[in-house]
Length: 609
Image (cartoon, rainbow, N blue to C red; front, side, top):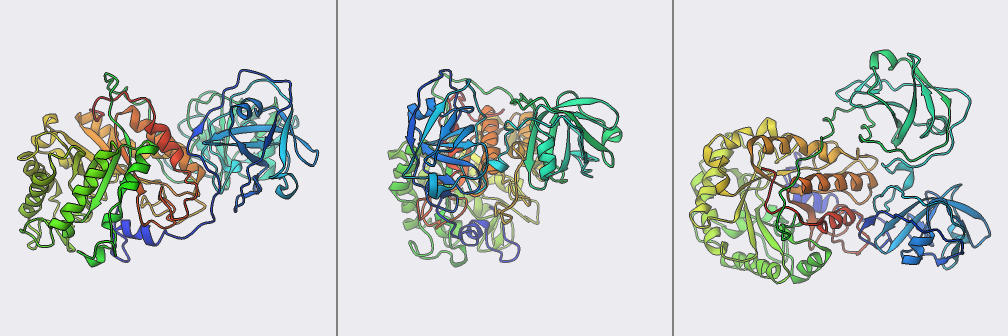
């Protein structure tokens, strides 16, 4: 977490207070997104109840913003409700299913035509199949959120394109990813998002470019005010066919679900890195691989303005129920935040017995529920506001404090690693590499084996890593794999990398997370080092962020890089990123996290090396 430049408060506090606005309860229950692959076909009708969801998104189980409904995900319902099947509603109307998404205990079913009236066809009424069509396998989708199908990042079957010619203008985008509205890295272009363009540029349609060549549309992505249209074939020449030239639809063949090897380009003219190539295969273990997906318990760093503060008033630690809950959700790794000023209120003194006891109790809870813990000194390279290596806070005292912590906790079976410092920033004296090494070597005098997590300067940003942190490994000790060092980066998806998500309308490229961590991962590979994403998190109102997180976790897991989601635990209120909210409402972020937490464990150690 970084610092709010206006208040000086760490973003742990900013995110816990400024972003704790209460949103309407999202009634969908369920925690995992799954593909549906149906091979059987049924000629008999099947009737299902409709979920009685009432919220800003549902009326009696019927979507308010697109033609769709939610039903329980029984095995019979999964077999019956397939794309192409016609279903009959309580008012007698018949619609054809266009997409089906399984989300935990429920199925979201989208149909053709206009919006449905939940008052007329919703719960407690039922819905029935009337015809079953050919088998289909729709693309997986994020857990339902306030912006459903119309902005889903995955391409979906579209209606037949018109046979007559239609011409559209090209967007005038030029940056590292676009040139004159033409995507630089694969065959694609961007045009305005309007009804006519949506109707004309559909999957399967043939389009004629300004140089006369004809290509077939392979995928269409609707993102904000623009349509990204991907074509079959090689990349296009922007000088030959880009803005201010136009593009025309010359025929339509009906939509089919394409197989597109490259992700959709970012919709807005903002620079973004090249999509990542196939990651390095993971280290294969004997089947007892390491856990790669975990969470942050951050309540121990709340109320930093009153340090040390009063326990259970300004700050607290998660009780056993949170460890039990998250273990049952599949998360076996916890990054536990604490403040230096609380565990050692005065430099050079013994550790505070009460605070140390609370951390030990947290480790006991973790051990009971099969969780490993990374200790996170959440101080941003500061102690009572003074930077380390200043006259007030000598480096030796920082190292000595970690030595004392290792003396007390190194033998606890739940301890996984030592997070030396959360998000150093504006270090001023550029002494963080030497400081981290001093602390690491102090720990190694006591504990020769547990991981030591070494964060990066500039808030540990993975995307900015190679600009600010290559000097971390200048000393051979910091490169020695025998020292069990792990380089910790953080990465959020919003426009300013902050993790505050202040723009509710912001959408996220499916591969944005991968692209942002790639510079750091490539640095790790080049130098044969280990890595860990200590923080990443997304808001509950963004389906596109769920998809981007899914791809990010897949990439990290394939590289054997563990990660901990921000955040979970007590006192988060209705925070948009928290997995634990006061109302207990559905958390769409859980779907990708659980999916990858439950994936087959094939990594024997932290990578990528």
